[in-house]
Length: 207
Image 1 (cartoon, rainbow, N blue to C red):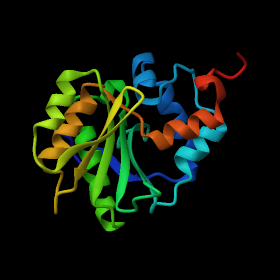
Image 2 (image 1 turned 90 degrees about the vertical axis):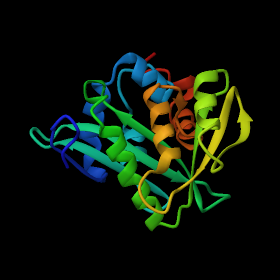
Image 3 (image 1 turned 135 degrees about the horizontal axis):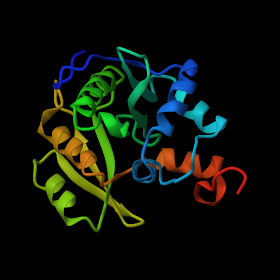
């Protein structure tokens, strides 16, 4: 597809063979992006982490990657992970490498992910927002009846958004703006897995 700045990108499902692309893309994230997206400042992803992020079942855990149409490098990923206790709901996360942010890629990734979620029977997305960020909490809390805070957890508020029948809808557009403001935390399921794989809050290997 063509982004709003005229760039050509390919968006497709992530496969196990994409681990090298993900590893290289992670290296291109700024320190700030790594911390805000993954709660880690580590220099690289471990092999266990790469397996978790790329060996997905495309049903309960879906991941869509964006590739540069020119050189084939990875540009970003959007993923959902279905809630075990509520099969019609899933947590979401969107990550775009720094030099491709602001081009509309996050919107395209989230739009494609939303279509896949509907196909797999998901009707609601959830996302964690920093509870002390009044601007983002206000943004998400005032955009419509289909957005609601479900519970508080460790300084965050989990928001639940009912998917529109088609497209992103105003609610997901607002959620995407919150991602752009870098005020959303990674899905709890991703954080839990990373914590289990890399103890002591993701201490870099060898330290």
